[in-house]
Image (cartoon, rainbow, N blue to C red):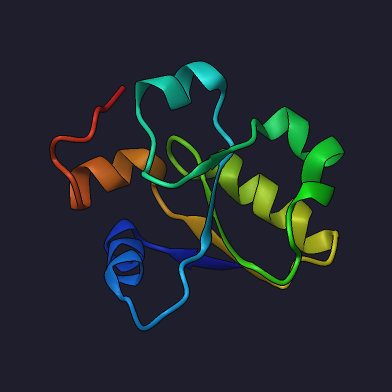
Length: 107
C-alpha cells in the first residue's frame, strides 16, 4: 500500500495520459450523501470483507474515508487479500476539501 495526498490524487485524476484509478469510498452511506469525490464507488467498510470479490485486484485503487484511518485499514485488508496496487488517501475527504476543493462540503 502506498499513501497519496489529496493534491497528488487531483493531479492524477486530471492527467489524461494516465489511466484513472478506482476511487473506493469506504465511508458510511450518510457520509457519502453529504459529499463524495466524482466517480467514486461507495462500499462501506463493514461490507468490504463480503464484497471485495466485486473489485478487480489488478486495478489501481485509491481507498477513501473521512480522515484516512478507515481507508488505511481497508487498504491493508485488501493488500492481504492479494490486491497489488493500493493507495490510501492521506487525510481523506477532509484533506481534499482543504487542499483541492474549498467548496467541497466538510463535516
